[in-house]
Length: 312
Image (tube, rainbow, N blue to C red):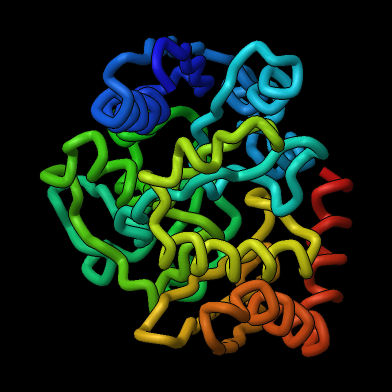
């Protein structure tokens, strides 16, 4: 890799830059004779800050423009939050590495540092995620759940600006930016099942150029297996991060346990399921769970969600 130039594409948010700069640092240690160029790319999800993800529709609103740059040879590597990556990659691209996963949980940031269970009845909680909204309405049906968009810093500021009692965010982002002192409550996975890929980052490349070998030092096999199971679940459901779908896998010894759910927009109906198997079966585990949930009424729930989104 001597004298090679790494052109790394990423979004321009503070969190995306932190993730990309970590990759830059690790590659710099491994290949000190190489040069690294960080390329900031604006995505549709970054531009449409005042529109909910559900209304934007489609999948890949935070990655498409970056993938286009990869395909057009404008960059060599793309650093993504895996929860933003559609379950199917464009032809010619592959995910070369998934480093060790950060904390996959969601967190509450609230006024006066109040945990979720002690929030007053009627408290106003902001989130831009249907997945979080559905589960929050099940946990605390007495709360008022409000739409929330913007990067992490913007959403935190909206607690004061929009007179919110709190907001729900991903723990991984708070940890990567050193902001855990602001967290009021780490929400257990059992209470708030994470998004598919939450806490993991992925490095996407063009196929056939040898990048997989170059990036092998960043690959964390248990994370890869967990995310593979989760993404197979999402692929089987045919959904994306804008839908009320959650999926979280954990490798326990030589077993992968995957839990998933699909919910109605109002949170009144949630279908949960679980599958397990060996790490070698990661993709099949996700497929089995997806089919299980679809067969138990998940298809009807997702169809109803699509109809509601089209109506809006």
